[in-house]
Length: 571
Ligand SMILES: [Zn+2]
Image (tube, rainbow, N blue to C red):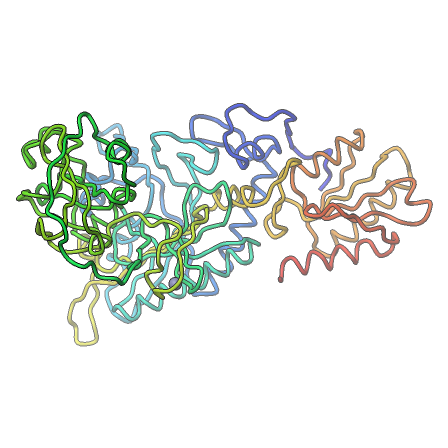
C-alpha cells in the first residue's frame, strides 16, 4: 500500500471532546470519525485493525467448532416479551415501530433471536451440541456515550451461543470458549487477565470477564497476590480477616448526644474515634420488604453481592419516610438496637466490640454497643473488596487492586432462555428436555480501543503487531533522491512478496512529518532509507516500542524485519 494513495486524515491537535487516550489517538491517527453521539465511521486504518481482530476471532472460534452465522440487527418485540426482557431491559433497548405499527428493537444482544432459531430447527439430541456465532453491529442506547469507541452506542460484537443436552456438555462448551478467548487475546498481543464476574442483566449462573490491563481502565480487578483468584470489583469476595473471637459483651451501651452529626466522618471526629469503631446501618427497600444491612464504618456495601445473597430483584436505598417508619429516627441516625426489620451483618461484625451505632433518634448515637444488643439474621460477605483484604480462596494471600478494560465476557446461561422461550429437544427415549445454553461476547471495536489504552506514549499509539493496521512502514527520507526510492521500492516489494503487511511512505513530505505519522499510527516496525546511510550501504530498522534503532546492510533489511514479524505473531 502506498501512503500517498491512502485516505489517512491525521490531525495534529488533540481533539477537545476526547477524554481518554484511545479516543484521542483514534481521532488523531485517522482511525475513526464521529457521525452522531456514540456513533462512528471506521476509516481505512481503523478498519484494518478491526478486521485483523475479527480474523483472529474467527480462526479461534472455528477451531473450537463454532459456526458463523449472521443475524439481523432489527428484532421483533414478541421474542423479547417471551424472554420477559421487553420490560426488564430499560431504556438502553432502542425501540421503534414500523409503518404497520409493529413494535421492533435494535438488538443490543441476540439471545432471543438465536434461541428462536435453534428451537425451530433442532428437534433431537443428535443435533446437539451446537455453537453459533456472528460478528455483527449492535446498538445500545447508552445514557451517556463517551470515550469514543470504548463506550459507543453502535458497536461491533462477536457473540456466540452454545446449546447442549445437559450441564456436563454445557460445561465443556463453556471451557472451549474459555480456551478460545485466551487464545484470541494472546494472539492479539495483549497483557490481560481472566476474572470471575457477575452475570448481571444477561442472567445465568456463572461467568468470566477478559480484562485487558491498562491504568486507564474503567474496571477494577481484584486479585490475590498468592493464589490465582481474580474477580471484578462487583463480584469480588472477601475472606475472613481475623480469626480472633471477641471476648463477649464488655460494657453496657449508653446513649450520647451527637447534634447534627450524621455522616461517618462527622460522628467519628465528634466522638474522637476512628471510623472503623462505628457501625453503618443502611436501610434498603427491596422486593422482599424493608431490610437493614450493617457494615463497619470505614467500608461500603456491595449492592450486587447483597442482591445475589438475598436473591433480590430490586434493591434501593430507603427514602427518609421509610427510614423513619422502620427506625423511628431520621436519616443519619439509624442503628440496629430495637429494630424489628431483618438485620444482615457483614462478617467483620463478628469481631467487633464496644462500637458506635445510631440511636434511631435525632442527634443521638449509642456508644459501647455490642452484638449481644441486637439480633442479626447472620454474618455475610456484603462489603466492597479493597486492596489489603484477605483472599477468599486461599485464605492467606492479600487482595490487590488493578485496572482493566473488559473486552470479552462468557456466561453459563443454564436454562434461563430455553425455559422462558421453550427451546427443547427429544432424548434417545423420546423424552422432552430443555437445552442448556451459554453465551459468549467480545467487543471487537473495543478490543482495538483497549489495545491503544494499553499501548501508547506521547507520540501516539503502540499497537501490538498482530492487530496494527500495518506491520511495517518503509520510509524513504527524501523521495526526490532516486537511489533512496529505488531501494525503498525494492524492500517494499520483497516484504509484500513474503506476505508482510507493509506501507511505503512515498509522500513528498518533510521527514519529520513522516516520522510523526508513523509513530502516531503506531506502526510497529519502520525501515528508514536515508541518503547518508546509503553511502555506507546501510538502512535503519526501528521498533515503535523502543528508542533504539539498528543499522543493517540494505540486503539484510527485509529478512530482518520478516523475522521480527514472525516472532511477534507466534510469541
Ligand atoms: Zn488467594
